[in-house]
Picture 1: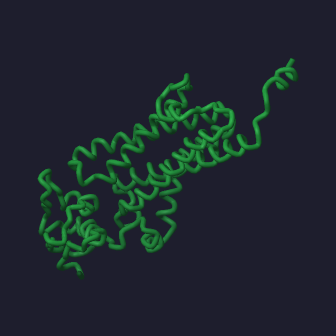
Picture 2: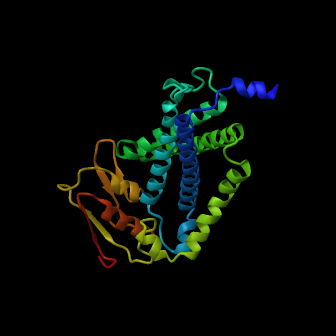
Picture 3: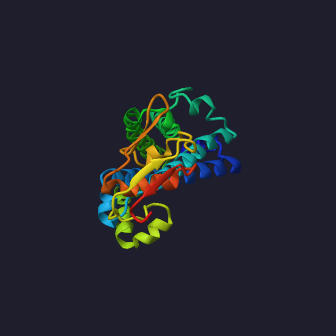
Length: 269
């Protein structure tokens, strides 16, 4: 009886097997980088990275990890469009439960779409009030939860990845990040663009902004939101004498400004 059933079910073509291998590999990369993005974001927000290394975490490192997660996640989803058996259509990858899809597929679709939305608002942050953006950014935690559910249920259904292995990645990622922060010298992480080069012991600085050069991109606000604020009417407000604890963020904002409109005086500037 079993042999008869196997004879009825056609074996996947080499093309479809290759496509599914690409989908599986991209899903694994996306899951690992998603865990790294979450761990780095939480450790940055709670101040753990500064306590361990003595340096502030750069927002750019978090963005790079999130971008890699988004890219591999999109590759994972779009790869199913290239299957010869037409088991997945374009609308199934955009609309939850379209074509009678499973709950695990819907969780992946919604999770990835929310992740894209949060990433898009991060890129357009200068047009969003900072407090409103921070509230919307919290949606990313919900999207990570949905993507984790999608990964776990998909692994169980397909048997392509042991659940113990997935659990190990999830639990060990924060521990690995903290171990790397503790073992690697901070200057190596500074060169990688993950940490700010200043130790936070700098003296206070005085800020001035050249209004003729400033194009209101709000990159300074992204690096130092407690110092720089872009108002609804397009005016840049900033603290001329920030506190010593904010010096490293201010210096990062000055380096990140594409128009070089921020001048700093003091703290060895």
